[in-house]
Image (cartoon, rainbow, N blue to C red; front, top):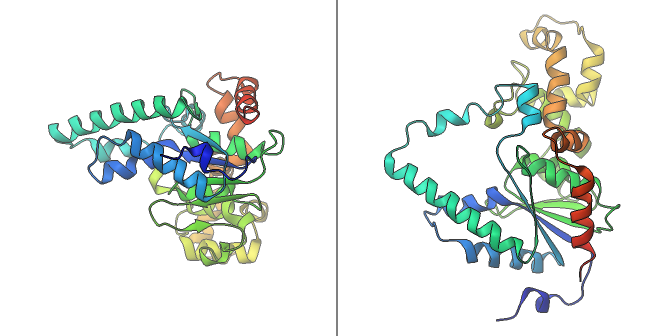
Length: 283
């Protein structure tokens, strides 16, 4: 079998960043609980396809302490999802996590696994993207079905979803969104995130958020315009949401707050930089 290094035509400074748990659930949804080596082959194949010499696995380790401190209800809705599990489902979930831990250990023997207690993969990926130039990284491909990771897309950073099999890049952004890439964070601030139990402004869904961004360009501009004249309920809701707008920026703006999210539980950003630096410059 041809090894990953042998597949590469020429070493480069391109990096594949994998959303560790997100990708693992690909096999969980298929009912497959022995995926260790399938996982390894998949990330190596993706790295080869996107011409990435380096692979970084960003792995969750519990929920974000940073976000729970800001909003205690953060991700509390997920407990409801699993409260009625059968004993068989609980057993299978335990087996899944055991296999996931084995997989991370195997991946760590070949690639860089970044995992910190009470820190989420989103923030780790955002940190690498934010400091891409400092670590001599050229292009980054993000592997995740999580649309939150589109917040990280720029001229040097793109995302591939193993679920939809679609890529999100600066070149096809308008196929997915009717507003500029820079306004995606504002869109999320206005609409919230039901999956993470982050409330949006009442009465503002995707279409109304898009219309507001066409008019105001950003949620910060909407914040500055408060109080906005109008009798519609959603206008009244905006006028009552000054604190929510600022809170949602802190909760969801990955690039701006990834350092706080990582360091808040007590982790050293210097140590993280050292690990990335060492990995990038090992042939």
